[in-house]
Image (spheres, rainbow, N blue to C red):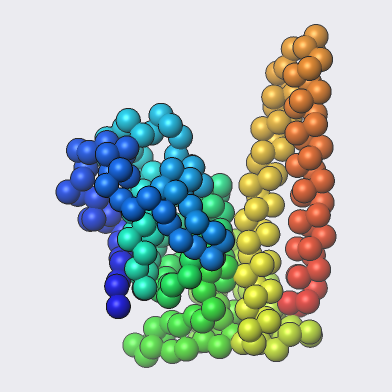
Length: 255
């Protein structure tokens, strides 16, 4: 068994902190094999938000989020059988969270995630566990079961435990799915898709807002630019409408 660990301290980057990103990548294998197809290190870099300008930067010059993404990339290129992630979403913005989720969702190995990000867990894991009163417990119904257990013990603490602004009622409702049995594989798949769509819709909404600002600031005499901006906005709106339809469908299924 080959184990790789992505830790909060990013300790594995200490010995290469003075190396340039291009030098680090050049020492790795030329192809990364995933369920979604083969990728080169350069393609992995691009998927994780790196640009050509980052290649000449030294590792210590990268931001916290960039170093975390680089550490993940280097671990994936080692192609371990088991990948342990300790709070992997620290320092990452919404776009990078979605990109990382997409990458991990197609990773063929065994993934062990320690995280307070329920949406990440629901997207990339099939089984959830929690330590409750010093006991390591399996949660067949996932995060919702954990929230319900905490609600039964201490109702006042649920809002904090739910995270991301999810109320106690909203967090526990999905344990009452009318169409899918809690804990079933179909239920977990639906939860993962629902969480992923929610994250992607947030990203698209931010892009639409940016385009609105660009349209306001644009030179109205530049018809080509206005046409391009408007076309991009319409495409994003169409994508958002499609996602919202599926998101609402899943929300109804999950209760």
